[in-house]
Length: 496
Ligand SMILES: Nc1ncnc2c1ncn2[C@@H]1O[C@H](COP(=O)(O)OP(=O)(O)OP(=O)(O)O)[C@@H](O)[C@H]1O
Ligand SMILES: [Mg+2]
Image (cartoon, rainbow, N blue to C red; front, top):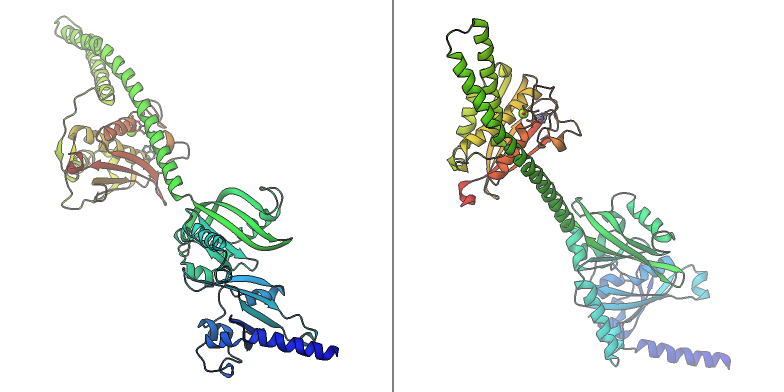
């Protein structure tokens, strides 16, 4: 009697499943179809179940060559637990599947694992619950259009959610990420393990949570991107089922921070320059008159006839030293840019050639090889020839000093079309800058030269002049040996 009852019940159940107008199929562990509803068969466009039996489910039902990227059966194989998954065919359609293992003693005996997969398309099921349909679509839309990258991965590291912003940050397409990307590969080696360790600990925002922090992420081409990462573990009960990460791209923020730091430094430099310049100009003016007096009176004394030769020599010395002082005063006034600027178009190559012509015969240049690279057709720079001459002289003499009279001086000019500037690079093969020196070289009176050899005004003056020309002056150590100074000067066009 009981047997009859069971038999009858089983027959009804079988009929009900067979005729169910949904895609239901049973597969073996290696994705081969063992059974399927008529409706599932009809969707394959094959005439009967005989054509479906033994075929790979991903091929026959989804037209794929390998298991779908978010295959629920694959998850059941690992966890032996039921699961709901979206099989994303493209960005607009998503079929939701529910899969569970058949927990049957007979099958267990034969050690065959069988998995039931059934159509669990929420939108179709929820026809009568519009609100849920809307909210599901809304959530998908929300994730897709979020400004930050959103990436979720399952316990095996397989990516299961990958929104538009994530494709921008990482360079992977959504399809590549869902099909082939292992979440560990978007971090430098070892970082993913560290992130998981921190996520599971209590110290970085609580268990299962990682508060925002700066992290390097590797793009598809291997280039690093700085991001702010917020992550969490998704639990089902006590079990970890996925990891969710929010990736905020910091590239633009870092660029702005660097720009701001540079501007702050420039401001600081020009503030220092202007206050020192004013001070220098004040002192220079005060000194000019008494120095003029000393020169004039020593000249008058020299014209007296009854002076001894010794006295004459001393007075000549006084006059010479006073003239030297006047020269220094002149330099100071120029430093403070109190002398009038005369701006006109000028050929930079020609100007440097003239400076080199003056310098190369000096003894310090005897063992220095001068290499130049002056391209033809360089646009003219709109500048003050005298002042630029001063800048080149200073930088070239500094280079000769740094090489202690022996080495190679290389001067290259080029036109940077993008910024409309002429770039002059002056390199030497000297000792380069010591760590602490580089940040101070443009400071007035900063010198590493012994007393009497350098005033420390050369580069600060050069800096002021180039800034006055709306240009840029910077310096850095060469990779191998020595230092390079870069001067950027706007061309006539950009000044107009
Ligand atoms: N090419 C270079 N290589 C290495 N260090 C340099 C180079 N050019 C400049 N410096 C460093 O920068 C310092 C400042 O240079 P700056 O031209 O302002 O003053 P100075 O040469 O010491 O004195 P001044 O030019 O007034 O005679 C130098 O003392 C030196 O330490
Ligand atoms: Mg100098």
